[in-house]
Length: 139
Image (cartoon, rainbow, N blue to C red; front, side):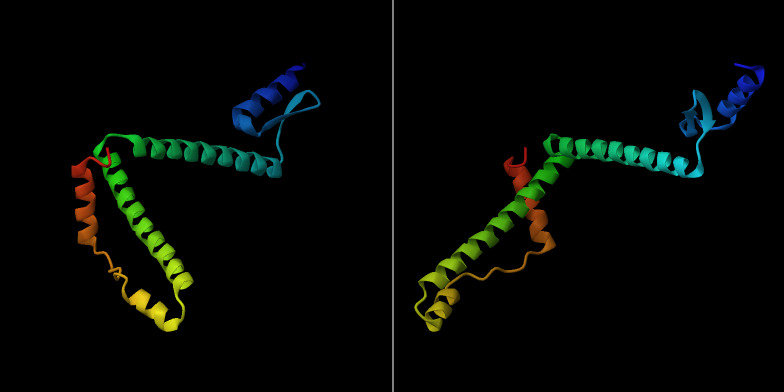
């Protein structure tokens, strides 16, 4: 290697970020602008993947934690699960009523006998969550 080549390479590594240097004909050279964009895109994708992986791991850990946050999260999820199951039961009942009805009047009678599903309020949700926590269901 000549002194001139040595100085060129030393200056290259001093001035250019290492990720923008490639080897061409056994000699380090600066990447083209498009190659730099490609490297940056790959680097950003890797960082994003690492952040998502870390966030997901933390989120999964919080579901199992016995911390206040974990218990509160599980209690809320249990309430949501209960509400979903109520709706699923209602759907199965509807299907059974339709199958068993002999005419429209019979179907109306069957549906009139069902208990109405009232809207839930924020206060009810808060009370339900506290009840689940007190009962130890969310531990």
